Figure 1 (cartoon, rainbow, N blue to C red):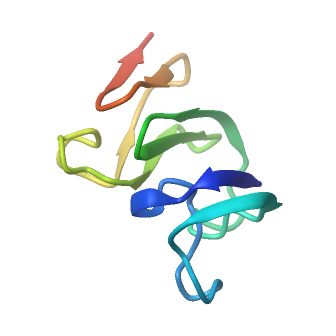
Figure 2: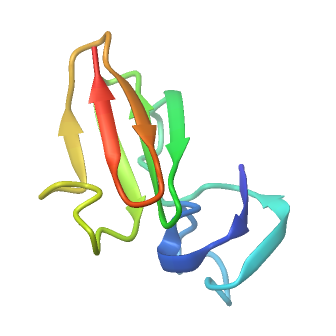
Length: 95
């Protein structure tokens, strides 16, 4: 579930599931844009992007990549021990 300001899709909400995708969501809303059937072990949120680490050892990104927050992909494979931190306009991965 996510809530708050969904600028640039950072809450992971699918535009096909919600009539008005931009704006503020004050009630917890189901995150629908991530792959179904994957359990997520870690989530981090920046100003306009979010990152989710799945049990499949992949990082999935949602939201703005205007400042290269995702690098060059919308998901990437990582080692099992990797953690993630999203800050305002950037993302850190570390083991």
